[in-house]
Length: 523
Picture 1 (tube, one colour):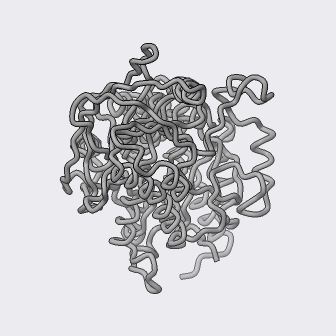
Picture 2 (cartoon, rainbow, N blue to C red):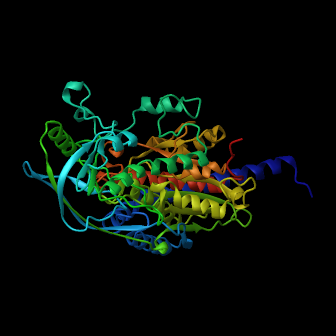
Picture 3 (cartoon, rainbow, N blue to C red):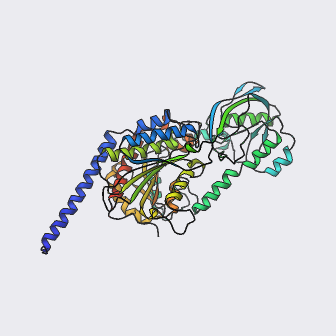
């Protein structure tokens, strides 16, 4: 029997009304769980205070991964696994170190060793010499061959420019922390191309993922010939710096983590003010003497190299094989707790899973979390996952799973509040995310820009033409103070920002999981 048209319209309207009410009710439950029962700051406290640093390849990384696995399982997350991603990524444990100048007067040097460097084999004392352009190896060899035995080297590349008050651009006058202004966000919203002249995020131009991997490989290798020369010449140690605020150390940039790599001589990052004083003394003809010690251990333990994968199985029999993915990199650098890079992103994505489980909502599609290792060394963890699950980077025909992922959302730009989403050139997503973020517009988190951003794990999924997005976040102190430094600590993490990020993302992810169809892909 065919129902009369008025009855059919009434039933359709009733179903639509019921669907809208169900979604509003689900978002209300998500919001109540996220804002009123938040555990996100407890998570980042534990990650930062107890389970850090999480340097790739280390026992501490694996210990933190086990704790995270247990925490996800305690919330009822399904299929939590530690998936291996690297057989030859080495661990490096720091036991103790010290750097001080003893002549012409005592100076306690603010220093931190770079990772995966050799130890000093006890206390060493030597004169220090300045090599100002280590990037020009032929020039260095011509000037310094036969003159480095038993010396320590102060590295001063051309990109180190100490800014004095007379320059009119004094670094101390620049703000240490900032939030995006409405004008800046509106400007980004108005971009019409993915790579504008003044991008909001970190842009790698139009490089493909294979090109980006070549870039990483060349970048990682650029210092190796110089350090091999220092080692061959018998230099005892090297000291470098980066143009940050005085007292801030930036000991990231050595990547000799593979078991086949030649390890550097002891190599320390020092504060720009100590670098400045030492370089000025040397240029005046005053010869400092430096005393240092580095006690560290290199080792290979492949079981330490794992991604953490877990999921909330979808409730719809037809849609549960389709997946909405969220992720963040789990590894950190070693000079601090890594609270903003990327403890904040990790804690937020873990909290998304907790909110979805504890709020009692039933997403139709499966929601999967990936916490990646080795991101700081060039996406090692997420790339291994993609090649295992989706297909080879250069494969023309990909695995079926690549077609089943509706979206991948990533968080890795510090601890600042979410302001919106980089659409990564996918204009078809704009009206969808506009609708999904409307319930959170009062929090000012709904700015969308067609612009790209790069240099984190969503690049991997974007390569497979999966709708992959990085979150726009307030910069806060990320670029000026915490990024890869000794100051990446919990005290720079605002609790409210994390709470908003986790709750809004839980709502966004839930709505993506409820769609009748997968998110549209770039053509």
